[in-house]
Structure formats: C-alpha cells, structure tokens
Length: 191
Image 1 (tube, rainbow, N blue to C red):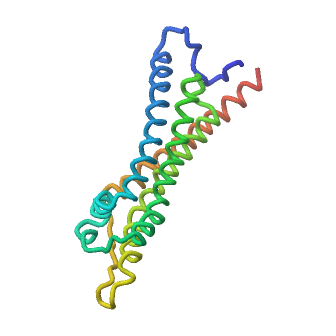
Image 2: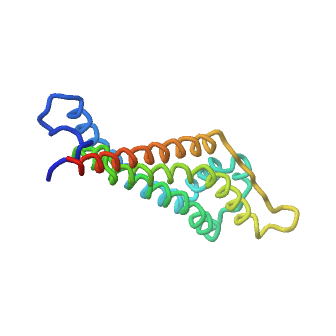
Image 3: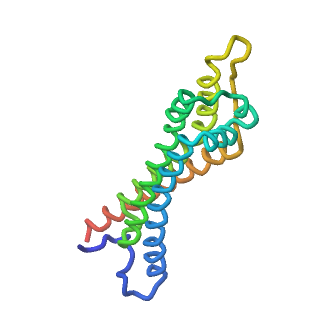
C-alpha cells in the first residue's frame, strides 16, 4: 500500500520518523494495558466496599464518608460511575487506534485525525461529567435518608476545567489535521 503525501517516510529512512514509529508501537501497548487495568480496577473498586468508600471520598470529599454504603448503594454508584469510565475507555480506545496509525506511518491522514478528534471529545466530556457524576452519586446515595439529611453535592475542580481546555485543543488540532489531509489529497489529485 502506497503512503499518502503527508504520511511518514518508510521505516528504513534515517529520520525522526523511526522514533515516532517505535514510540507509537510502545504507546499502543501502554494504552491497551491502561484500558485493561482501568476496567479491572474500577470493577474491583465497585465490589470491594473499602475501595468503593475510597472512590466516594475521592469523588465527593468528606461528604462521601457520611453516605451509606450497602450493596444497593454500591450498585447505584457502579451505574453512575460507569458513564465517565465508559467515556474514558472509548477515548483511550481511539487514542490506541491513533498510535496504531502512527506506527504504520499514517500521520496526517483523515483516519488519524478522526481518532484524535474522538479522543479529544472524550477528554472534553470528562470536564462536565466530573461535577455531574458527583452530584448524581450524592443524590442517589442519600435519597433514602430522611428529609433534611439528603445531600446535594456540587463539585468543580481545576481538573474539570483543564479537561475542557485540553479536550478543546485536541478537537481543534484534529480539525486542522483533517484539513491538512484534505488539502494533501486535493494536491495529490492534480499530479
């Protein structure tokens, strides 16, 4: 298969492209391992009560220590926390595919740009998901409490803000890559 005009040189060429190919192959494996670990550890964290409590403390702060944690509450927390975890895994899957594209020498292609865009969207989504998930967990786990003891937890962190900014940058870079790929295809058709 012939490389497009904005693809990298062949693997035998003595450039920094070889380093990018090697790094991309390594990052594909690192990303795969990360996906497996996230699934395994989140699964464990949601079935082992002390780990679930630690997860609640990390998500809600001190308010998480006062919430009930019976099996039904663990199930509710699992369902709520599944949303950002699924979005994260979806994004990591696309960044894994992006590294695969890079390892094959396809850098400025529409496919690589699409994977970068999908990853950017997943990072961008983590910004609003953080506060929404914390609020949903607080409401769901305290819903059975008597009136006056229910919790409305509102959180917002610098990490939520940074997720929005970094996600936006990734989506914008992906759009620029798509335009570069389109122009390269257009220029190649003139030859």
